[in-house]
Amino acid sequence: METLTYRFDGGKRRIKPAPELVGVVSSGNLEVLIEAAALNGGCAIEIKTAARGFGAIWEAVMNDFQQRWQLADTRISINDMGATPAVVSLRLDQAVEAMLEEAQ
Image 1 (cartoon, one colour):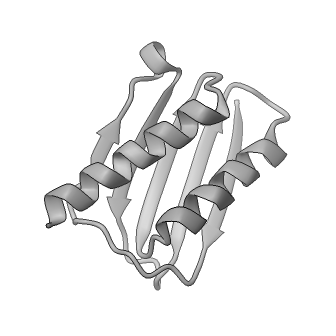
Image 2 (image 1 turned 30 degrees about the vertical axis):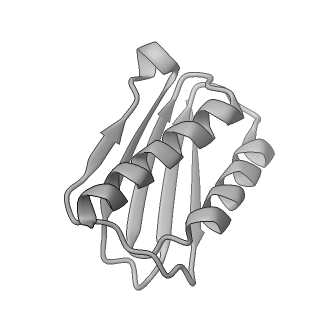
């Protein structure tokens, strides 16, 4: 397993306080847990992945995700067993959309 961590600052969008879990490692090769956290306006992402050596791809996907959503005070935990970048983006978007829908 490889663990990758990213932090983004300067986001403007906050999510609801209750955590949201999207996906299942065994069915879609990926699960995402997203939760509000006091991070001084930052968004922290931790990825545990069985696919070693893909840090540059993960970084590109996480940068794209944060540019789209601009999250602040958010912690995201990802457990991955080899999902494609498209599945990663889909699951992340699903998690944020669920958090924003319930907050409205």
